[in-house]
Structure formats: C-alpha cells, structure tokens
Length: 296
Image 1 (cartoon, rainbow, N blue to C red):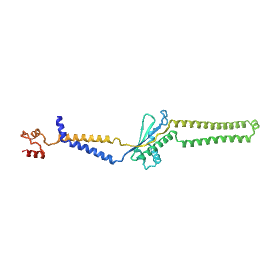
Image 2 (image 1 turned 45 degrees about the vertical axis):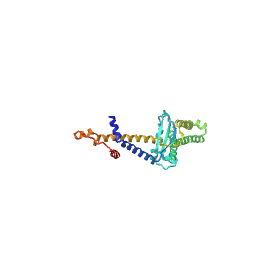
Image 3 (image 1 turned 45 degrees about the horizontal axis):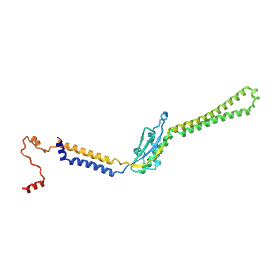
Image 4 (image 1 turned 120 degrees about the vertical axis):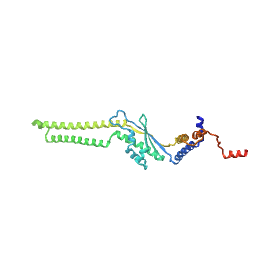
C-alpha cells in the first residue's frame, strides 16, 4: 500500500512542487511590492484608583476618543483623518497601570510623531477628566463668593446707617424696640460674616480634595515612541505558505488518482474489458528504442 502511494506521488510529483512554488512566489511578489510597515510604540502610566467608583475612567477609551485623535493630529502636524488614525492605533494594557500606545504606518516619521502625540494628548485629557470641568466650577465659585460678599456688605451698611440715625444708649433706653432692631441688624451682619468665612474654608478644602483626586488619577508618558520595521515574520510566513501549497498539491494528486479514468495497470484493463491480458507493451523512450535498434 505504501509503495503504491509512493509510486502515485512520484509519478505526479510535479503537481505539489508546482503548487508550492506558485504559492510561495505569489506571496514573495506581494511582499516585495508592498511598502514596509513601521510600528511606533509609546509607554504611558495612567493610575485609576480602585475605590474611585464615583469617577470610573477607562484610559483605553480616553486614548481612542475623537477628542484625543483631533488633538493628536493637530499636535503632530500630519495629514491624517480621525478614522485613519483610529485604524492605525492600538492600546495594549497589562495588569498594572502601564499602557502601550502603538501606531502602525508606512512612514516611520509619521508613526513616531502620531504615537508621541497620542500619548501626550491622552494623558493630558485623562488628567483633565479626572480633575473635572474646572472652568464651570470656578465660575460657580466666583458667583457664590460675590453673593456672600454682597450680603455681608448690605448687612454692615444697614447696621452703620442705623447707628448714624440713632445714637447708642439713649435711643435704646427711650424705645426698647430700637435696641432690639439694632441687635437684629448686628446678628445679620455676624451671620453674613460667618457665611463668608465658612465659604472660604470650604473652598480651601475643596481645592485640597481636587488636588488629591488628580494625584490619584496621575498620568504621564514613561517612554517616547521610536518607529521600528515590522517584517520579521515574512520568512516564517513564506515557509507556511509553501507548506500549504505543497499539501494542497498532494491532495490534488490523490484526488486525480482516485477520480481519474486512465488505465495504468493490467488488472485495471482486465476489470474494464472483462478479458485476460495477453501481453504488456513496456514504455520506452525514443533514446532507448534507438539503442535497442543499434544493438540488433
């Protein structure tokens, strides 16, 4: 059985060899004509505390956001669309807070510029999101401070006006209601002053809490990107493709042998004709026939 299989393969060995050669040649032609690809990888750290459930931030989502893409394109000064950048961008994260931002491109300079720009803009945007919208918060704080200061000034002005219109002591002794009115104005002034002091103390504590939150969500670039060619697997791929072509060729040989209708053996001729074989004419090349004729 094995000898018969070897004979079949030997007789049609050109089929798997040709199949392997065609597959390998096609891949080699595609590899040689294609432009080389470069990958630039920047390493960043982006801390996200586990207990910060009120502000769940995902750094990979921040990196792949349109905001970061637009800022990175502007920073890198390259002609790139957001879709093209997102297609070339990949973010790899491990078990720690360290992430690798990779850009794949045919231009090494552009890959390096985009990787560094995405790393810088994503860490800055991540920090901004962790700290909150400082512009709107500051506007609210300024308005509340102005309102409290106005309340204190109004209360102080009312107390001063009362004292100017009514001398202390004599007016209060002659009319007890004036004394009560002055005490009410004085209490309002004191309440307004306490409100201003408590507000400023709260602002200070809020700033400290905001600084602590931002530090907990610390992010910065650890390693700048440098473009490296990505073509080390071409030889391995050529071997795989060549082996695949060789295997398909062997399968084709057995299929041709199984489904073929040619008669190559005497027993096949006997089965097909239903008559015994009288003799077999051996296969001979023209050179062998000439040698046989000269021998006679």
